[in-house]
Amino acid sequence: MSDFFVSHEPAIRLACFTVLFCFFASLEVLKPRRAKSQSTAFRWSNNAALFFVGILLIRALVPLLPAAAAIWAQDRSLGLFNHVNISLFAQCVMTFLALDCLVYWQHRLFHRIPLLWRIHRVHHADGNLDVTSALRFHPVEIVISLAFKLAAVVLIGAPALAVIVFEIVLNGGALFSHANFALPSALDKTLRRVVVTPDFHRLHHSQSPKESNRNFGFFISWWDYLFCSYQAQPGLGHVDMKIGLAEYSSLQQATRVDKMLAMPFIDTPAAAREKESR
Image (tube, one colour):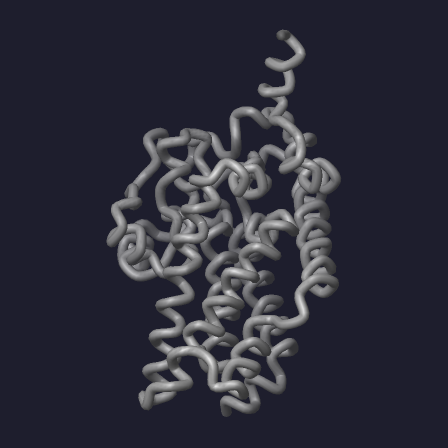
């Protein structure tokens, strides 16, 4: 079974992504959580374009993807799990938890370090939130995140199967947590004890800095409870809260793919106006 997943990784990941994307997009149509303030076609096309630029950059710059790095490390007996005698199941569970915790702390660093925030604000500048927001990351952030992940996979000596499962679950979790659909409150309350739900994560996209610096988890919600970064609900409620960054009041400016690609390298509109007034 492990060899099957490794040899068919691209097809399996694409199939899972496609099915989950269509499922959550359908729920957004059937039971939306918030009204949209911008054309769906415009947002989806630009978010998808940014995503594909990221894929092309990875293909050009990164010789190994995480599962291939796991195999490379195993062949050379590198990393912790290649030197200890524990079951594959235990290795997979520990790898999943370690990588998810890494993503949590990486996310916090992207908010804390100004240079990294300039890159990550591309994700937060969107004035709407839906399933395509899971694709809206600057290509430079994607490459940096991949570098963190590759280093962790080699240091852990992670099994390739665990890495593939983690990648599938993480991508599916991102689609789920960004999706704009109404989850029954009782179900949300139960699920968020373990995983990041749409309401759990939506607070993180609030225009309020106090709220956007909460709920950093991507899939497992435990890290926010454990490291004291959890907030249950936004102050204005999920329907009335403002999404995005206040300094990007123009939705066109925050959503066009060329503007998103340039965003880390130029000042915010407010900062630019301040410089001009001096």
